[in-house]
Amino acid sequence: KAYKTAERNGLVWVYMGERQEAPPPLPQIEATLLPESEVNITFAQRECNWLQGLEGEIDTSHFGFLHAGSVDPAQVPEDSLLRFTVGDRAPEYHVTETECGMMYGAYRPATPGQTYWRFANFMFPFWTQTPQGKFTEHLHNRAWVPMDDTHTMFISLVWKQHPASVGPNKRGQMLPGFQRVFDHMPNTSDWYGRWRLKGNAGNDWLIDREAQKSGGNFSGIAGIHQQDQAVTESMGPITDHLFEHLAPSDKMIMATRRRLLKVARAFAKNGIVPPGVENPEIMYPVRSGDFVTDAKLGWREAYDRQIRASVRPLQEAAD
Image 1 (cartoon, helix red, strand yellow):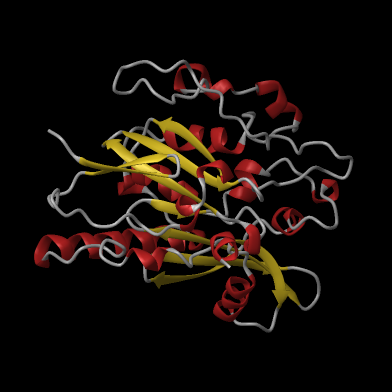
Image 2 (cartoon, rainbow, N blue to C red):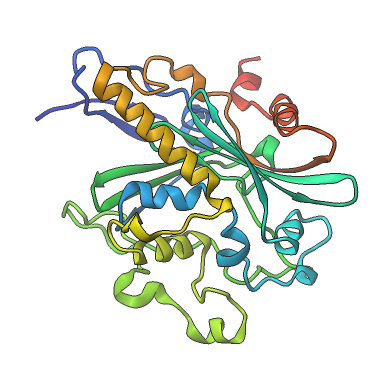
């Protein structure tokens, strides 16, 4: 069977729906509209259900444990916002529906009279934005594309001008476990043969037990993405949610599941298409990232101020 395709800025898009003669427009996601030369695109196959991988992405509280569990607050420079994450590993949350999906604002006390915020998004049908980067400059998106029920293709698009970075410790050294690791196995022509990471279930995701034992790396696995990969893949191809115990820090996951079910039922019952299919422009303004602001500001006002202050390279180029 043949499907309609389109190429834009380094990616090939495939429409697999029924409207092959008149497919819907491509989403107006800002990171996908940048010139190909200005974007880093990364692929990585994950051997689990797509929603399983995506849910790990929209849970910010795990960052302070899985990724930064061995980081002593005393190691973190005073000008790094990471110090607030490792100083208080239990954020509180606000979660809301947006036009194109769901958004959370996770917050902690910062310096006296200020609040540290981490905002992130889920965007239909399978896009995410993470909070790990300066909000006004953090231009990126990630897709969790289902290959089948138990395999997912992760696609990351990041603006080269301001890639997300946790930063070094006070001595200028990389914080333990924070390396950017995307070491791939050689590609093959097999359906599951592309963009497989060298660290996988067959080698325990290259875990270093000595680093874990010494406290140098909480998980013993190098690289934030690889750590996430290990956790979500080790849950099994499709995890059994029957006995899970969701906590207050899982608000975003719970709300996103409800929104997905609501939209799927509306389509099945009444043919109402998901957000963004007919109105792709709703994707464009959405941003994520972290920042510190006056504690008296409401969370939506704090977000809106950051949106107004954000860099918009496409608009600036047009001007």
